[in-house]
Length: 173
Length: 173
DNA sequence: CGTCACATCTGCGAAATCCGCAAGGTGTCG
DNA sequence: CGACACCTTGCGGATTTCGCAGATGTGACG
Image (cartoon, rainbow over all chains, first blue to last red):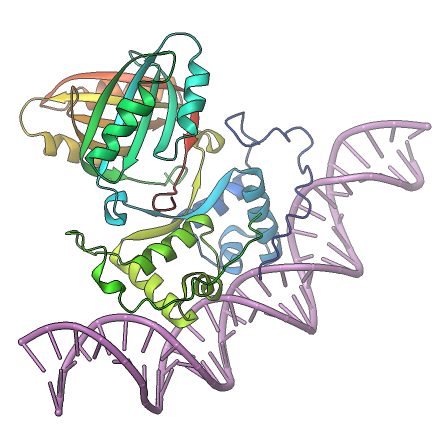
């Protein structure tokens, strides 16, 4: 099923190849953008339907989608409200660091409870979102795992009370 | 990638109705959770493959997925790195409110540049994530649109410098 | 200028998947 | 018991996916 061949990955664009991670964008053209929009509305929409919408053949759409996935420009995934999946405690943690900020960010990235890590300008060096099953779990992650990282000067936690909005419509405006 | 397995999990799940008795609206059982996990790995995975992985028939998976989508428990969508789609400035904004917090949160929710709104405990009442095209746009949203909302006492912005991690694997642990 | 290398699109069968439907089976609950 | 919810198996037909061959376009280079 699903051979997944990855075949190529082949370079594709002469200049990029650095791709993924937040480098600079492999410059998406209008067609790829339109394809992404289609898939933001429905991640399972058939290639033929997308092709009709963006003016490409089914095969061409398939190739472009595969490339976008290979390059890491987009992912097609199921997203849920963590609460409905059994994670009852979430928090954003602001962190101040002395020394190398990036290494701390990397350490956070390795924690499975950490969903989101971003380096920021302002009164925090790093913001990290934590998703936990209960209070004990959250307490453990913040106090034992994060505060104990060498270089973490201080942390401030914002426990989530109510999630009001969460969209994935970048580019669909 | 994903060379693996599927390994059936065989097993009867006819007793599963007792677990996951969360007070939440659409309580999910273990099987639905497993389905969601499958779709978090690949939103386009065929129903038959999912069925093999979670121990259900293709038809049953199809029904469950449809219901999960109808109920709004999950969405299957393409997600992208905003940078690659042309949004170059992002920020998290912490907001303090006097009066009704929820109405402010609702007002933020209505702004298309606001991706994420959550009410929190701690030194901010609300955290909102803003996605903009450039600095001017960001400045405009924060200063003109957010700070001018009646009831907003103060705001503090954290401009994103580097996104290190962003996952959608809730439940996949 | 010719042409090689490569990326991309199109067309087209073959295989696989999706999807609705029907005919049970089983467990819960009032 | 009967209603109900949910799963299973099985089945075709419509649709989609997938690989591949062929056509086209473009940049690099001798």
